[in-house]
Amino acid sequence: MTDTSTTGDQHYARYQAGADAGAAKVVVSGRPGGIADTAIISVMPAPVASVAVSPATMSVQVGGTVQLAAATKDSAGNPLSGRAVAWMSSNPAIAAASPSGLVTAVAAGAATITATSEGKSGTASVTVTTLPPPPPPPPAPVATVTVSPASASLTVGQSVQLNATLKDASGNVLNGRTVSWASGTSGVATVSGSGLVTGVAAGTATITATSEGKSGTATVTVTSLPPPPPAPVASVVVSPASASVPVGATVQLTASLKDASGNVLTGRTIAWGTSAAGVATVSASGLVTGSAAGTATITATSEGKSGTALIVVASAPPPGTNPNEPSGYTRFAEHDFSTPITQSTPSATGLMGLWAIDDPTLLPNMTYAVDLGAPRSAPQVFQGKFPAGLQGGFTSIKWQGWDAAADGNSYGTEMREIYLSMWIKIVGPDYENQPVAGTKMGFFGYAEPKSSPGNQGVPKIKVDSPQIRSDFNLRFEQQNTVDRILDQNVDTRRLMTCGVWHRWEMVLRLNTLGVTDGVLRWWVDGTLIMDYSDVTYITPGNTLGFYTFKFWPYWGGIGGSKTRDDYMQVDHIYISGIKK
Image 1 (cartoon, rainbow, N blue to C red):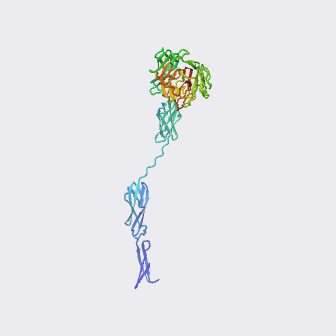
Image 2: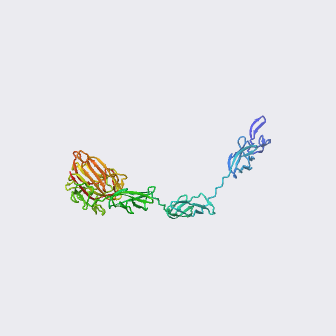
Image 3: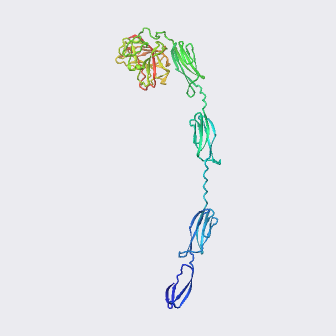
C-alpha cells in the first residue's frame, strides 16, 4: 500500500493488488503502537479478453491426432493462466476434439476446432486426409520357365514363334518379367529377343528362355529345303550361228540353254539334227562334219525348244591346188611352217622366197603348235598369242615374206597382180576383238616408196557387237594416201568363225594410173565374199607395185586393252603373181 496524499485529517493511500485473487486485510495506524483500524480488500481476477488457438491450421491423416493449445489474455494483452477452456469441433465426424484440445482425425474432410474461455473464443482449421494405400507386396520371384511349343520342326528359312510362361512357387503365372532367349547352335537356328526362331541349316538346336536365373528349353529340328523343280528350257541358242567348213573338215557347235529369266541351264539333254545329212552330219555332242558341198541347217533341241546354225560346206580343193588362183600367175613365196621363222634377216626357211620376223622381243608370242587336223601342212602350224594386257594399236606378232629379191625389210620385187592363199584359225570358242578398229590381220605394201611405205592394204576382222563373240565379218581397209573401206559385198554372212580352220584366198590387181579399175577379190573357204573392180592402189607420185606381205595382226586402233589371252594359228601361206 502506498500513501498518496493528506487533506485535513484525512489520509489517502493506494492498494496495489498482487497477481493472485483473494482477500487481503489492511491495517492502518497513525504511529507505531497508536490507534489503528483495519479494512478487508477483495482482489478479483482480470477477465479474459482474447483466446488464440495454436496451431491455427493443420493437416492430419485419418486416425492421426494433433494437440491444440489455447492462449488466454486480458485486455492489456497479459497472458492469463488457470482459466477454464472448453473445446468443440464443428464436425466431430471429421475431427473430434477432446476437453484437453487433442484433435483426432476421423474421416477425410475439414473441420473448425473452437476453444472458449469466459465467453471468448479462438479457432483452428483442421484438414483430414485419407491414408495412402499400403505399399504393394514384393513381386514373387520366378520359380519355373516353360517354353512352348516344347519342340518344333521347320525348314531352312522358315520361322516359328516360341513363348515362355513364367510361374512363381505357388504356380501363379507371372507377367511383365524380362525374358532372354538364346540358341545352343546358332549355325542351325537363330532366335530373336522375342522368341522368333529361324532355321539356318539342317540340324537340331536347343532354344533356351531365361528369366531371373530360371530357364526352360525347346528343341528345334531344321530340315533342308527340298530342291526347287528345274526351270524348263525357254530358249536354245547355237553358236557359232553360222560356219563354213571344207569337205571332210569339222566344226564344233555348242548349244546354250536358258530359262524364261535368261538364266543359263546345264545338265539338260540336247538332241542334235541336220537338215541335210548328205551335206553335213552332226554328232550327239554337236560336232559337225562336212560331207559334200552345199548348205545344211543344224538344229539343237532340248525340252521342245530349238536353236539352229547354218553350215556352209565348201568343196575341198585337190591337194596342192589353189582353186581361185588366176591362170598365168607364178609362185614366188610359200611357207608350210615345218621350219620355224625365228630370224630377223630374210631367209629361205620356207618352200620359196625369203621370210623373217620383225622384232625378236616378240618371239615368246610366236610359237608353233601341233595340229593333226591342219588342212594343208599338218602337223606343225604357226601359233601367235595376243596376251592379256596388250594395248589397242599394238601387235604381239610380226613376221613377213616376199620373193627371193626381198631386202632387209622384206621389200622385194614389185608385182602388178598377186594371189594370196593361207589357212587361219582363231583358237577357242570365241575371240575378244578390239572395240575401235577390229583386228588388222596383215599389210600389203604398195604404191609408196619402200623407204617409208604408208599406203597399205589391210585385211581385217571387223568390229562387231558384242566385243567377244564366235563369228565375224571381214573387211579390207586402205589407209593413208588412199583411204577407203571395202566390206563384204557378195556374201555378207559372218563366215569367219572361231575354233575352225578357214582358207583365205585374195586376188589384188593394180589399177591403171589415174583410173579406178583396180581389182580386189576375197574368198573364205571357197565362198566369194568381196568382188571390187573400182579400187585405186596407185596414184601419181606413188606408183610402186605390190612388194611385201606382212603378217602383223595389230589389235585394232587406239583404245582399250585385252582382258585375256587369245591365240591365232596359220597353216601354209602361198603367194603368186605377175610382175609389174
